[in-house]
Length: 209
Ligand SMILES: O=P(O)(O)OC[C@H]1O[C@H](OP(=O)(O)OP(=O)(O)O)[C@H](O)[C@@H]1O
Ligand SMILES: O=c1cc[nH]c(=O)[nH]1
Ligand SMILES: [Mg+2]
Image 1: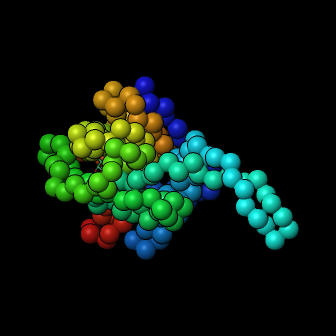
Image 2: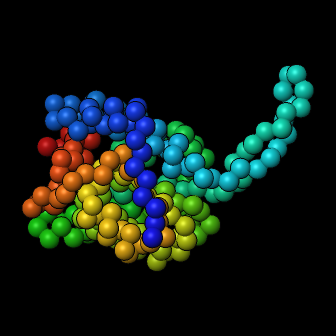
């Protein structure tokens, strides 16, 4: 089963408190989601392999460590995933970016895919799938299915907030995928919203409600 990591760093938790607050407006919400995503990038990439190298400092040779050339890819799930991907990209600027467009049908809560565009060497990349909300898990499971169908071999998932139902569904369907969260919440409500959650992430990021 994929490992579940809940990132309890004080800066992440402090910023999340403002993200959850219904009185936080669109501008601040977007900035905070971006900042938390950048902070989360540290933990999500903690196990990336390093290799030894040598550089010349102004004083002399230094033995240093560099990323061992593992190719990375970010895959934000549209639309709300975009709110996190820029922050992560600032930390991993050489990563390629693919996009998967899905929306959740408000009646059935089932994901409907409308767009997929990926780097053409997706099978060689370690992919970081990004969505602030893991609710029923339908959107993420569908995205991981879609990526595997197109050749992806190695993936991890980063979300801000998840419900236990969504975590269980992803772990059941994709046991090879580790999950990184800023918070594991209590439950889903009857409309499939995470409780206490933060409301509708896409609408709060883009000011569409
Ligand atoms: O785990 P699930 O039950 O599938 O729900 C989570 C999904 O719902 C939200 O997207 P939404 O469908 O609202 O689309 P948006 O990102 O375009 O706003 C959210 O960003 C996730 O993608
Ligand atoms: O709580 C939720 C559930 C799904 N999508 C959201 O944006 N928020
Ligand atoms: Mg979505």
